[in-house]
Image (cartoon, rainbow, N blue to C red; front, side, top):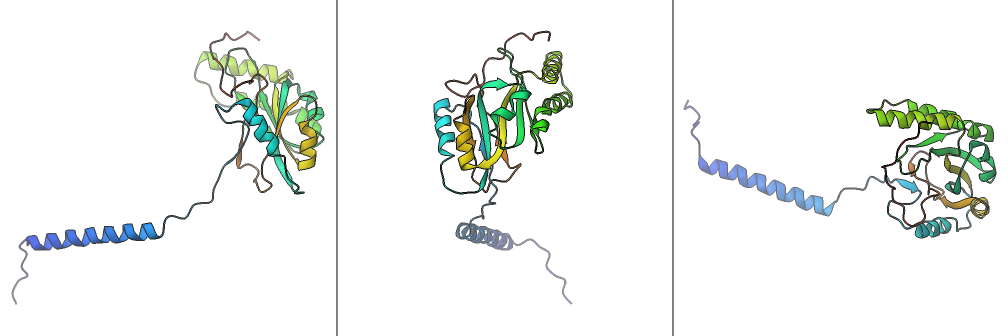
Length: 225
C-alpha cells in the first residue's frame, strides 16, 4: 500500500485560510443580527453627581417626589447643617431610618464618609455614631497623617459630634414631601419604588456645598483633637 504523501501543498494552506476567513465573516453577521442581550443590571444613585450644580440637584430631588403611587420608596435626606446623633429623630419625619451617614468636618481637609446601616428604631440610629467610629478604625492606614485623621474622626464620633450629614429613609411619597419642607431639611430625593436595598450608591449633599458639587481643598492642618 502506498504511503500517504506528507509533503506540504500550498493550496491546502490557502484553503484552510479561506475557510477561517469565511467562518469569521459568518460569526460577524450572526453577531450583528443577534447583538448581546443587555444584562439588565443597573446602579441607582441617591445624591448629586460630581460637578452637578446644587440648584439643579435640588430641583431634581424635588421632582423625584412627584407622583401618586402608594408604594414605599428609598430616599436620601440632606440637611442644611450637620446634626448630632441626638438630633436625628427630629429630622427623619418619623420615617423608618435605614442608614445614617457621618462625616467629621475639618476645614480644608478631606475626611472619610461613613454610612451605618441600622435596624428600625430611633435609639439605634442615635447610637450609630459609635459604630461609625469602629468602621473608621477597622481598615489599616498607610501613613502618619491618615492615621491621625482616622483617630481624630473616630474620637469626635464617639463624642457624638455634629457630624451627621445624611439619612436614608423608607417612606411613601406624601410623607417624603412633608419631610422635604421641614426646617433643617435641604433636600429629599426618592428612588423609584422598585429600587432594591443595597443596590444603589448614596452621596449626600453636604451643607457647605453651595454652588457646584466638587471636593474642596485638602491642604489644611489637622487639629490635635
